[in-house]
Amino acid sequence: MSPATPTLARPIPRLRVMLIIIAVMFSLAAGKAVQVQAIDADAIAAEAAKQITTTVKIPALRGTITDRNGEVLAFSESTVTVIADPEMIRTNGKFDEAMTDADREVAATAPGRLAELIATYAGGDAADYLPALTKENTRYSIVVKHVSQENYTMLRAAMSESGLIGLSKENTPSRRYPGGTVASNVIGFTNSEGVGAGGLEYSLNETLTGVDGSEMYEVSPNGRIPTGTSVLVPAQNGQDYQLTLDAGLQLQVEQVLANRVNKTRANYGMAVVMNVKTGEILALANYPTFDSNKAGEAEASELSNRAITDPYTPGSVQKTLTFAALLDAGLVRADDVVEVPGQIKSGNSYIHDAWSHGTVQFYARGILAKSSNIGTIKLARKMDKQTLLGYYVSFGLGQKTNIGLPGESSGVLPTGNIEDYTRDGIAFGGSGLSVTLIQEAAAVAAIANGGVYNPPYLIASTTVDGAMAEIPRDAPHRVVSEDAAAEVVSMMEAMEVNTSSSVFDIDGYRSGTKTGTARKFNSKCNCFKGLVVSTVGIAPAENPQLLAYVVIDEPQQGTSGQGVAGPAYQDIMSIALARYSVPPSTTKSPKLPIYPSK
Image (cartoon, rainbow, N blue to C red):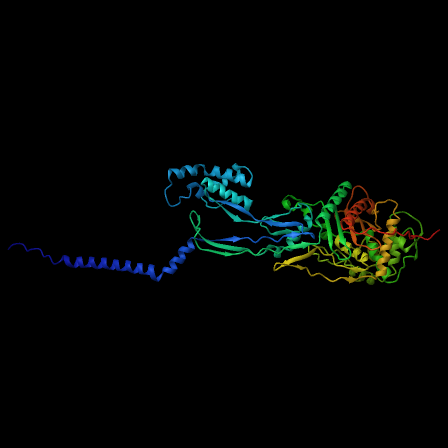
């Protein structure tokens, strides 16, 4: 029997299976295409757009601070941070394709050429920029900060002309202080992040800052797509503020104060000029000081505003407030004859005057004019202690003035049932209390203003919805009667008239002054060490308009308010009266007697 013939029917099922598999694969592919093109098209398009879309912040410009005349004290400049893309520079933008010989030729010289252009428009040395331009394994490298927008625009134009790529910008406004040191302790400064870190920059930071905007746009590996989608949310710039300060006067006061501190080899000095009719601060100076543009280079002690942060014992300037209270209460009259012994017991100690004397007689005005501690204590003992403290509170002592600067001290004013010796020390300003310069200046200004206290203020107005609006402030209040205030002014003028030197004389004007000298308590040695000396004055005495107050801490040359602070007061008041065109006095100072005729 011959071998069986092979059958041809068996391969057919296998072929059918293969055809079925191929058909299924095509069906799946078609289904996927339908899903991509129809069902998931929107989701996929959105994901693709997300991958090529970027959002950048548009920083708000910080508000401007100006003086009373509109002179700019602080402003924000539109500057940028220049950013490099080292990978783009290294490949001449060829990320997904092979570099040509021309690309390699450009890339080889690009870092050096870019560095030269940056140095041309941003300053500095080209070599200093090379590390940022050639940094490895990154597409983001900060090259230089605080480049003006104008210079960056010129840099980009030069890059385009040279066929260079790889640089971009981030908007990072810079804070500028045109006056440098002028009012720097008042204006303050911002930190490296542009946040207020001192002075008004700190206390007004929230409203000065504004609200940042943003811009969303599409990008490719080579940069922004010009025709791509773009969404812009504009920034809202911060509020502007106008101060009561006069930048020109401020500069002159700072110069006078610096010269006096240096000449007397003092620790530091403070000075203020006020409009007694309104409470406006026209100048507020500290020395040593700093440049707000270079705050990071300053000593910590130079950054503070001692005039509102550092309380001190006021010395005999305090006597003006004590006499105002006694005169207002009707317990003393200017012509009362007072017998003043050579010393007076207070607690377990004896108080003396600055000069040695036996028992002498003074008119009450003479006690203030000659600054007798003993006479002041004798008169102050006529008044109930709580009543006297109440007057000091009404004068603003023991509480913040809320002038708007950070770190303000309340000073120290005892309350409750105080000891007799505490009352004595407070009355003549030798112990028992401490004040800030701005507190004491505002208190004496109340006397010069006919007995009405004006809360001192520094911030005049701000912008609200593009319009200027005044800053609300506390209402004035009467402390003593107009007659009592006038008597104290007359006593201050008597001091000026009866001072043998001409240190308090203001050419063409009648003025009234009061000096202060106080010992400083040193907690390290638990002893008194060093002095705080001062001079306060008002002019013209017949109708006071301005007050100037100078305080010098621990002078090494001189020991009295008259000799140390007096010359600075004289210069500052003379400058201020002339600058504000205050009419000169038309009458001479009366020569009122300070002690009975012998």
